[in-house]
Image 1 (spheres, helix red, strand yellow):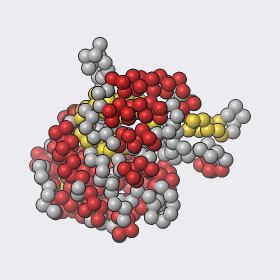
Image 2 (image 1 turned 45 degrees about the vertical axis):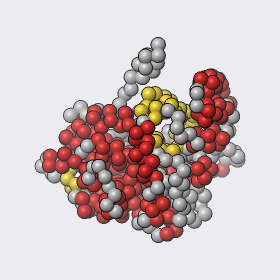
Image 3 (image 1 turned 120 degrees about the vertical axis):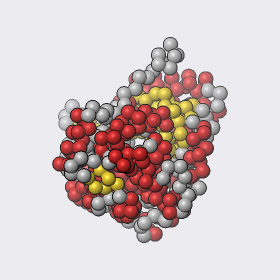
Image 4 (image 1 turned 90 degrees about the vertical axis):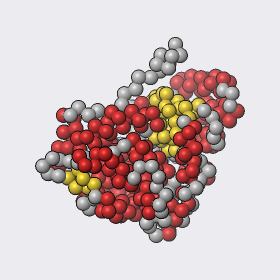
Length: 416
């Protein structure tokens, strides 16, 4: 199917995230709602969610599970998304449904089913709540014209820290997410914000088994001590907070960001918060409000994390955004590569300037819904250079893992 054929197809719900687009027996494009195409599995899932609801002692969580069960068999997720946004004190949480847009590499419209079962880390949840009140000030201090920061972030949904006990569906495919930002429905996020969930136990495992070994191979020896888990976790936390910053709709009446940027939306959606997370940390340091790890810790740890992300799949939107960021920082000499050892050195002052410059560029592309501009950025910077390819090959030869594989399920949890 060409994009022109898609555009000319007279199908009212062709852009709906919950419809299957396929050809009928005569070759004509048609749409089928998810709740019809996958009815057998969805009816069973809804029944199980209903049973879980009756077992929950927490009224708000019980209501969410009941509404979510109904959503699965109707494709109407608005009420259950709003109910999920209202959860605050529940110890157990379940994210389930067609919530993953990354699988649609064609246009970025269609969703894939994913699920997580989570247990709240209440100590870290309290720490994260303290950061929420800074979001309006951060939005006002973004390095762009006022047009691009006129939407105030919704601060009614503080970030959450969890231990994950189950990944399933698209969530368990390929490299595992260490944090998610949901719901994706702009009707919900514009009014209620989003919830940013950080999976601390998964991040800890990823740091120990992947990020730390990458740093040992790729960072200059005198900066390796700057790589630590608290900096890795803190940057991820700020990245998820950064999803609330910048424009959520185009500033020039091009519609939603997803409509304007089409298949590039995922790249901007992931890439902008990544660099804005570093911008937040730099901002906190300038405001003398950065606690725990030093800014240098965050900067060096972020480079090791970026190299990890690039290895996760060079054609995914997330990896391309990481490649663009890495090449941009190298191009401004914020990161330099020693030719003899192949190791990288981070230059903090140049890094701070480059972070501000890239943050500004991405926010403007996002706010303008500038599809050709993003396309040009991908062509200019979204490729693996020969030097970076050698480095990635060196990590492969050193047998540094690419991702985590979970041993999970009822047996592992001791439930059978």
